Image (tube, rainbow, N blue to C red; front, side, top):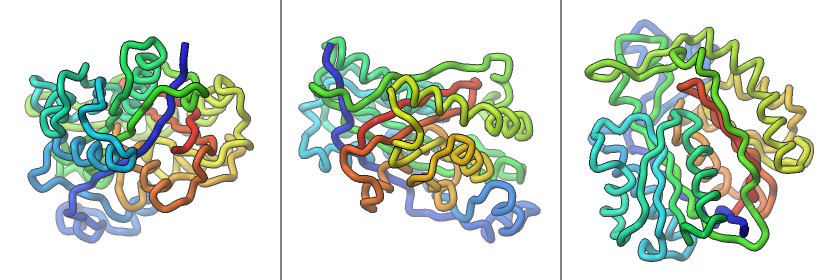
Length: 310
């Protein structure tokens, strides 16, 4: 059994930016109300861009950073819950956009924890020898499933994608995954109906996240044989500053905390790789440093693992 590691990252967001003041022209809200409840200032919104288009752009950047080309990839996993077209799946569409020949390609829907689920799946495939190099992508166009008359949800969402190139490694750079779900709370976050619309029970989600995330994140550290004090960075799902910051304090974490939610909003499965890629681009995390990734969201699913920063 060999290990695997994240070799490089990339991200992409639509150029269109929607500010809190812009939203105040659409629904009864204002900048102070939004910042005080979720910490969001801006979000990027698709203007014709599709899930596979954003995913492919992020993947191209990750491949470029890795010094690789698409023909070196034999596994593509796209984590998304907003792919409106069911078949062909987003992963094969990404492969076609990138010119990747005959990869194993599938989509994975675990909502906001999707990237960590997908990263674990790629790690397992590389360890088992059923793949030699993988693209793991989280990509969402949440704006396409948003009720823009509901101020409780429309202020949250953003669009974007983050991607990782994952390769075999003699020394494992992706730790064991802690993953699970709370099925009895599954309906607390949902995208349902025809056409599908995003809705959530905000207080239910908030209560669960503020009581459970820190303990689950600690368990992910334990599986990796590391303490929270040894982490250099913590990249949780970018749901809400009022969830992220208290979770970091309860965890006893004092390093670099991802706060991309401020400028990107909640981008579901894209949020963890998007935030991580930005931190790496800005040089805020040393190469090889331990980083905790942790996603949670619809289903109600959760997943996390410690990785070594590329």
